[in-house]
Image (cartoon, rainbow, N blue to C red; front, side, top):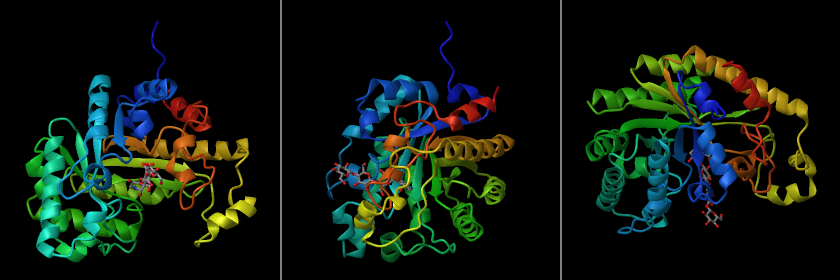
Length: 343
Ligand code: G3I
């Protein structure tokens, strides 16, 4: 009997369908979850295990254990493996944040890219070489990399990665880089790498969007603009969260405990909200299909609602519903809409 078709099959002639995997999925601790992954997806991204904090915990110590497991899992199951991420200001190991000497910082930077990129050379399809280097206004974020190395650190990162892993595709990845100002900064950044004669193959639009506020027009403009630069375009971290971010401040975790309105769907979510989310996802995928000649991959940031990072951000204890599969791993309305688009 023909195996049941999943998203990856429905969209096979259009683009890859990916998911970010965290430790439990890489260690295959839940057979049902791993069966779901293999049915639905043909690309994977490590949600955390290849970030510097985890893979390079000390100056002269690397920990490849979980990343190697993911390589083996991807090879065994014929999944495209997209590395995330070499250079990112967040989730840096503590030692890196404490380096004072400029030469030492540059040595850390070079060692990190050389060691990690060459380790996975030939085993990985792509790297998000630089992640989230831009501010919302399109200027460069005042990260430790900018402070210690100046604006050329970005080109330098791509140059080192290309040398260490010559057959791996190299991407720039960011959130909100579909918004006009940030997009302009992103285009400038890409052009600078290209002008230096350094290889950059693609750009990731992360796609952390909000229910009822998906910026369709800006997304389409960005797909076209990045494609114009000769780059592959990918949606790399897709989710549509349903909870408002109408709260701020350090006391919010405490307030959440006494104010249920800050976590309105703790006991379940009304079907009307899930229908609205399904429509948002459907309209997004209609747009992606319209530009399937420019988009090579759409990756969700997680597999099911229960393990999404959005249950823990900006404070822990939220009950969010951003993905296509629910906490029992059952497909949601959005999943059926996306399959329906291809019927
Ligand atoms: O693994 C440890 C565990 O041992 C420890 O007990 C626990 C206690 O806090 O922490 C665990 O690590 C957490 C890790 O996720 C694994 O679950 C970290 O604290 C937590 O900070 C980390 O969050 C990740 C976040 O990046 C870090 O900034 C999220 O899972 C991950 O989804 C998120 O992903 C980012 C992308 O890389 C870049 N774009 C935005 C996206 C969402 O923030």
